[in-house]
Length: 209
Ligand code: SAM
Image (cartoon, rainbow, N blue to C red):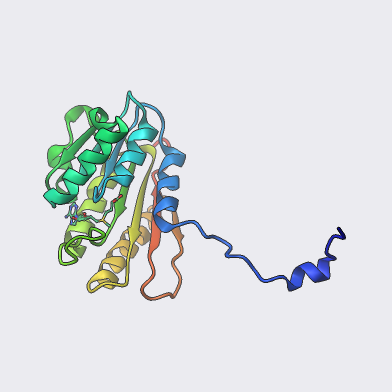
């Protein structure tokens, strides 16, 4: 079979450049920095997929603190972790992610390798129970304060539901402040693209406590 010339190749329809789902990309950003033995935070446990991913990444010697305000979400997460054999390395917190500092054990303070937030509402659940700009702002600050040097905060923000755009602005403001302070800040998929999710990634510099 003859190979296409460069001119023929240029006429081929373009495949999607980045077909990866936003939630998978956020997990990859966490996996990139997590090491065995790390402590990690899932700010929004939901159905537990992110919690399970973090629990795998920190290994048997690490630990994950997962938060959700909905009992339904916490029981879905507990079921998934049990099925995956990961339940003993996760603590589920039935409170707001903004309460991190109040519930994080002293031995885990300042040791977060990653803090992952997937904002919005529980898929298939009550769409009125959503993350809110005020508590999200507090939680982002609290989680950043507990990152270890080289640790990363990852936040998936949605703009398509009522209140989503305001919450996305809060996430943007946090990212801008961290950038001004000298952190490595990357925004994935932040386009003038109303209704679409995007990811903020903030990595705390090595050597800063
Ligand atoms: N990470 C989840 C997963 O892997 O399935 C998806 C999370 S879902 C998009 C958002 C979750 O945030 C919902 O389960 C909701 O109950 C929870 N949530 C809302 N406000 C919260 C708060 N203040 N603190 C912690 N969780 C909250």
